Image 1 (cartoon, helix red, strand yellow):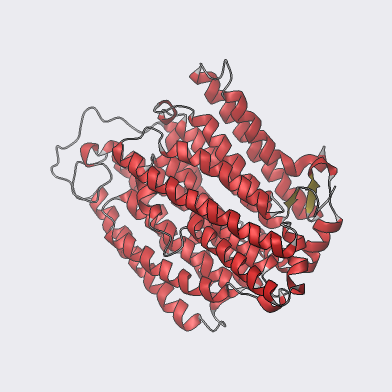
Image 2 (image 1 turned 30 degrees about the vertical axis):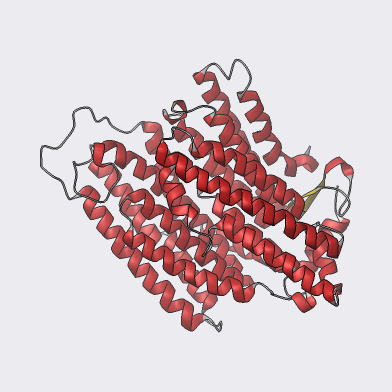
Length: 505
């Protein structure tokens, strides 16, 4: 059974989604919730077990149908992919638990769609070839289209339509890029491409570069990198907060694809195409951080503010990819986990604040006070301190690691001022938001008798996500070692090629 372990984070969500569509799950809310939660816990447990197993044994290559790479489809479970699969499974479990407090009844098929989304994201992280990356992209996108319309209105529909159109265009560009690369290299297996790209010569070099840059456009769109970021703030702000929280991992799929393709295929061993995307990634990353920070300051509500925080995190991650070294990649992985969890917590917190403030919602204007000011206020303070990077939370560790990783780079003179000024801007914006939401009230008697306390399940999920920040610090030693090991493994191109092309099971 252990040899099939790498396939389970994909198979379990797929089987769960199908089961949830069948009677009696499809007709009974209680049964649907129970099955969804139990299977989400199982998926998370399997992901953790896989992570520990890969950490102890090394890369696990699973050849589907026993057709070895590069001729067959392979799943590659290494330290990087299993880390992100575990993060996805944890976030999916949180979204399912939070939705089970009542949000799942506001639209159709919430639970099966969440599991289909987990299937697509996990598959994108585990796949060993670019065509199946495209396939899993489409699976997660189809699920996300439907989830965007969950409990939707006109504003939601408009944002969803823009999101769908942009991603359909992106999918077309993705296929064109893959076609060019396949025509030049004769393969789409990532390890095989990494082995063959340095052997190109003549016009094939330019064709491969064109194909690689087309993929960069696609990944920039998926990851919301400037100038293809405009869809994200409106889309995330108009979606149900529980859906937006789950979507916090989706931009990371685009970031992961950039990391995998431009480190492994077009990395230091790529000959004439070595680090071909680096100049583009660096400039666009800095611009994305700046635009995201401006969006955070200009945000009129907490959900839009959080959506722009996602942009800042994407820009930071891509800047670290552009550095193309082990320390930067390790810092990237730590920051990725930290930023994904705190962004999800803020989206969920915005939901509770919006419910308890009535018509004003989560807009950053004076309104009635929330019914649970101490609970929600403390949660907001912890989330804000984590985002800004204040000790002793994970944001501080991530920030120091990032600054240390960029210290000796040529770009430090540009990155450090931008990153530090952005951090100050986030501090100002979040301080203003917290003051407005929890201190500025229209009147002392503005409480609404109909306002109810948050569901305990919702509170547990938010506290659980926020608790991950101090845990990332408390267990910082082993976690940092794992991140560094994952970075070393990713940058060991020859070792990865040998494991995939000679180690399929």
